[in-house]
Image (cartoon, rainbow, N blue to C red; front, side, top):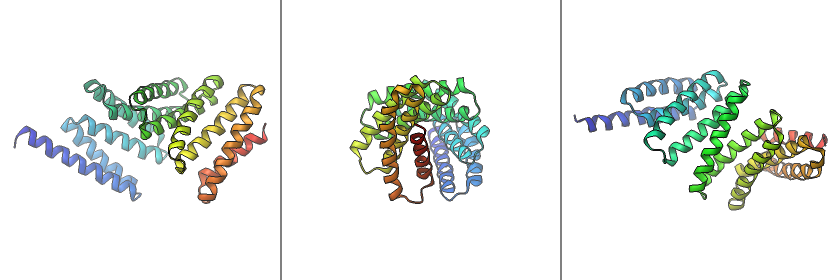
Amino acid sequence: MSRTSRSKVKNLLLLKQIHTAVSQIKKGNLDKALETLDKAENSARKAKSTDALYYILFTRGGILFSACKYDDALETYEKALVAGEELLKTDPENTDYQHYMGTTLSNTGNLLKKKDENTKAAESYSRAREIYISLLARNPENAVLRSYAGENLNNYAVFLSETASFEEACKIQKEAIEIYEKLLEESPENPGYQAELSVALSNIGSCLIQQSPENNATAKQNLEKALTMQENLLTQQPENEKIKGDIELTRKRLEDL
């Protein structure tokens, strides 16, 4: 068998392992999925398939995060970042690789925030933001990239508010709002965009209140708009606990005005 043929076989086996893991995740078999991904990682390293290795590590990081195994998730994402850097060295303009890196950095920021490693968290969020700014400059109509960029900005703004960087938090939150407003304008019935925009509006309301009492009128407008959107979403998804939590938080922020 030629080297090219062997490489194709290895790649097919890797794909099969990854697909098996994804299927196991969908069935809720997280432990089995992790076992499968461990085998896939070993195969990817032997095959020197960096792109497959990156995807495996990214997928495993997400599973570990969902299982609240935060230290293991962070370690896995850090390995994924190393793989991502290698990919970008070989193909620095690759949109997929840059997107992977942006998402991994954002998730890493979330985990570092949980560990109170604020300097590192800020760096991760900031790097993700810069990556998505560059990506959106080249792909301004790509809804998937815009959605992920908005999610990172929402997370970054919350982090900045929690660390009392209110001016910067409001700036970043406005960027997220602009993204989600445009997405919602294009797809007005999309509940995901509605939910993300409502959270962003509620967050900027809170941020403005903490920044200065002079902002209270603007903050109230944003909070009331957020609450209206969230209450409408709840009528469509009455069992959605996250929306209920969002409503409770927004109402509290209004009461505290």
